[in-house]
Length: 320
Image (cartoon, rainbow, N blue to C red; front, side, top):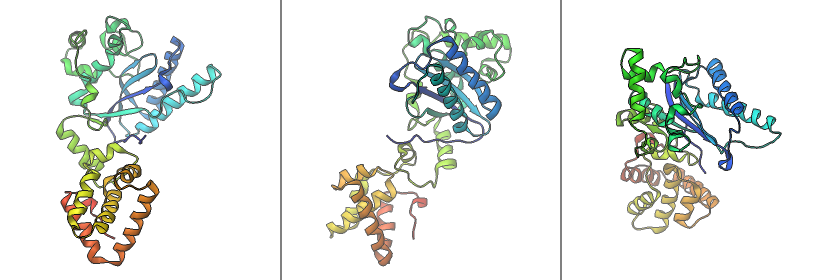
C-alpha cells in the first residue's frame, strides 16, 4: 500500500481521521476520551495547532485542524504517539493501536469549513448512537451552542459564517446542523481530489502549481501521480510504439524506460504490463538509460518525441 501525500504549509486546514487497528475500539472509557483531549491541548500549546472541530467515536476520531506553522506531521505524531503510549501502558499491552497512517485531506477553508464541521458533528447521528448531535458528549458541537470552549478549541471561525451577532450565530448554526439530520447526502469527503484535496477548481490548481509542480514522481505515493496528471502506463507504451514503429525491441525498451521514469507507477504495475519482474523493470530501465547516454540522437527522440505525445509538463522532460 502506498504512502499518503502530505501537503503542508502555514495556515493550512485539514480534516484528519484515524481508526483503530483491525477496526477495534480506541476509546474504551470516558477517561480515555478525556486523556485524548489533553493531547489536543498539548498539541496546541507545543505546535500552535488550532482545532476547529472534533468528534471522538468508538474506533476512530475526526479532527478539523488549522496549522499556522505548517507542521501537521509533527502535530499528528505527537497526538497519536502520546495517546498510543498512554493506552498501551494503561492496559498493559504492546503494538499498534491505530490502523496505519492517519488520513488527512487538505481543505479550502472558506468554501468548506462550515460543511466540514457539520460532517464531523453529525457522525454520532449517522452512526445511530444518538438522535441529535447535542446528545453526544464527545464532540465539539456543544461548544458551538452555548458552553464556553476550551482555549485550544476555536469556534469563532466557523460561527463567523453565520452572521455577526454571537447569539444569532449559534442559533443559525444549530439550524444549519439540524436541517441535515435524517437526510441522506453524499459523503462530503468523497468529493476530494485524489483523497487529498477538498476545494474548488481554483484552489486545487493553486495547490498543484504552488506545492506539487516539478516534484519528481514517487511510485510509493499514488495521490501525487494522480494530482500531477501523470500519464497512464498503457498510454506511455502506446506512445513508445508510435515513436519507434519499425522496431518492436526498441519500442519495448523505450516504453519500459519511459514508464519507469515518468509515470510514477509501481514497478509491479509496469512489470505486469511488459511481462517482467519488478527487478527486471529496474534493470531494463538502467540498461536503456546507459544506451541513451551513448546515443544522443536516440536520447533526443526518446526524451522529446515520446513525452510530447504524452503532453508531459516541461519540468518532467529532464535531460542528462
